[in-house]
Length: 219
Image 1 (cartoon, helix red, strand yellow):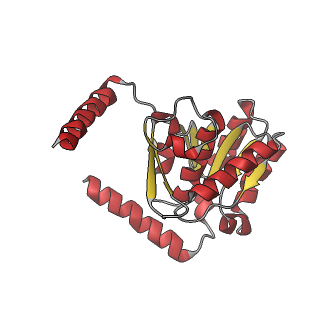
Image 2: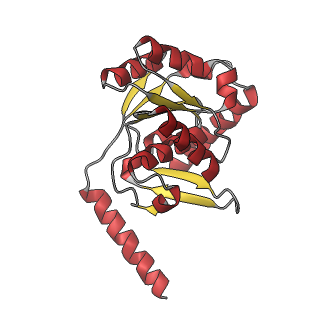
């Protein structure tokens, strides 16, 4: 009974806060070539050492290279962390954060699906909030603004580039841990359909159905 009352109070306060707080949406570049616009805009903001958070498949397909080439041409010293796997774990996020620190990075750019974007969100949050992922679990636990955070989704369906949440699995128990905070919303995102060209057909089909499911549910 007590838990129900506490939960009801929390939901009421959260709903009230969502109406009182100003809406925040990322600056979004859309269309063919929009990833170039995003990368150039990142560099114009003074970012000198971005960490690209992605997975091995996108590196092998050359998609990450298309992004890093633009950043390098604009003068950025780019580091790449490609250790993200589906349903990223604490260990993977912590390894990405270690890469961020070792390279002296000053921003995070996610390139990939929801897993890469979620991992990038938490790496950016760790960079300015003490470096301990476990302390950020839950609602409204990100005390300080994240490191500059940007996203280039390569799949349809997750919408992580425009949400304030991330999901990371406990490395040992595999239990999914949720992180929810407005500070986790990327500053900018690029929706470039050309990046999906060449992706494995099953992945494109599955994520397309995911997007369709969300659309049907919304209706």
